[in-house]
Length: 331
Ligand code: PBG
Image (tube, rainbow, N blue to C red; front, side, top):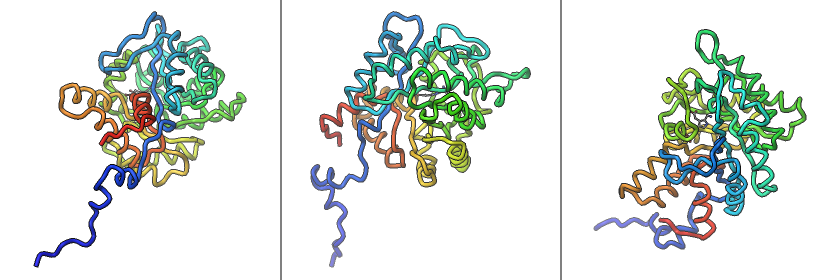
């Protein structure tokens, strides 16, 4: 006689109401953050060729973008600056009149407390060589000479009104350096988001277009080797010990194992950045008719959440928040 199963896991999958009731993980608008590019010297928003649906915005447009993000109910915007001119030490990053610092002030004003204003704290958009730090005489990226510049950049961003600083440069000791400078300058309340496990990834390709990166070469002497997971946990624990309020894993999808392990070990919130290449892959595959766009977006974000991310930085933040508010059923 055939033995039929008594334990049937399909029972809870039978209807959409049962599936909704049984979902272990959810996306919520308040835990999505939108990366925003602000470019100096343009009159109107310009679409970014490598990232369909994403634009560089002029400073004048930032209040509107922030307003839209707040209306969507998302948790924050992460600002990136694209300056009109760059130099060896990235002075535009520490200048209060630099494009990123001005954008922070505009965003903070427009946000009016409805969402958080976050800023990328890294030199790569501001240096003419495109590296995340300043260079030593032999052309290598000089860790310790970069730290005081990050510290000054952090203070400038805090002064402009940033709530959370996203330290993405992968210099050793950057969290401690920025934390000390913030505290000394009277910004003890400003939080540090440490891009702790940030890998030297091909998936940043479209972003480098978005910020018009001048980098010739790669970032493998400071960003992490994709072969390493244990080291990613060590990076996160170091950053927590140095005072990070939040740690992040980036990119997200190829590093879900690292995300899960960091999330198990972290005593602070863990975020993930679904980067430009992850975005572009899904957009292009969907436009080629190969995958269902909305389901793929939803699934990619749920996977990141399931792996342990509390908050996700994603270029789809506003669109997905709209679906969530509308109670849209994707699967
Ligand atoms: C560094 C920075 C990068 C990204 C975010 N911050 C680029 C890099 O490290 O090369 C990439 C984000 C993305 O690809 O969406 N300022």
